[in-house]
Amino acid sequence: MDAQQVLEKFPLRIDDVLRIAEHQDGIPWVAYKQGVDIFRLYGDGISGPTAALIRYRKGGEVPAHEHVGYEHILMLAGSQEDDQGSYISGTLIINPPGTRHTVRSAVGCIVLAIYEKPVRFLGASE
Image 1 (cartoon, rainbow, N blue to C red):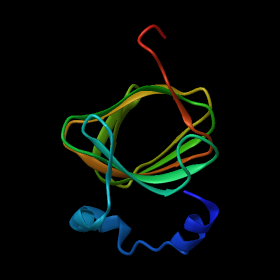
Image 2: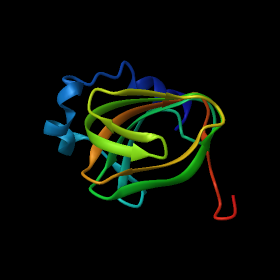
Image 3: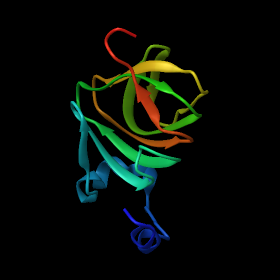
Image 4: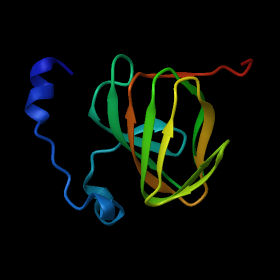
């Protein structure tokens, strides 16, 4: 996405975000990982900061990764688990740089994710 496309997207407005599950079919999701879809609000996830809505379907998982910068997750609907615990709708999670985890959702969820820097996916040997 070039600079002009970014500017055309803003101001971005999402109404009733706390009831997003009720209108999730109106969001142009893109397949991301197994059972996980993403809608990027800004950034490309490769360089610089990124914000995105992430939807985990039942059993969806984002494989082991490390956060190079801060990660902020706001649970909007459903629940998810990682190596540190379980989180339900309304929970705010802040993971500092160096945090490593695998994230999954047994029942499905939608989160707002804000990353200071792109994540680094870990190989099977790490």
